[in-house]
Length: 149
Image 1 (spheres, one colour):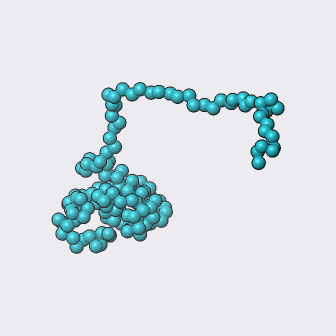
Image 2: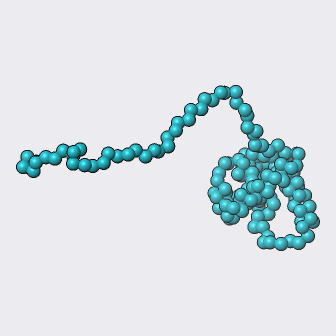
Image 3: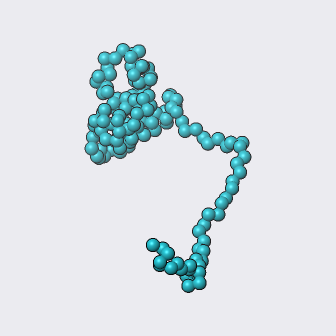
């Protein structure tokens, strides 16, 4: 869903759809625009292709990803972009918003050291060659042909 279509939603419907208030969304867009403006001033050369999505759409894409837990392929097809562009967009917006201290984003939990003692048993299952008995006349029992038919 593009930002042009979202403008008509009421604030309560916006919160139901994306999981954040409209005011929070607007403050997110302000922060992202500030960072993008600083980045463009730093890199005076505007190289590369222009992005397909505006910043508001990129933030909505990220909010959709967090809210619905859909795959990046499905979200990308909704917005008309590829899966890799979706991944890069989500990472870019997450990095910008996590550096800004105004918003609380889900963080990676540190690994907890458990107090459970584990016992480890190692089994040696390597193959070792076994000599096969050699064939000779004494070890083979021969039957008479008359009795076998």
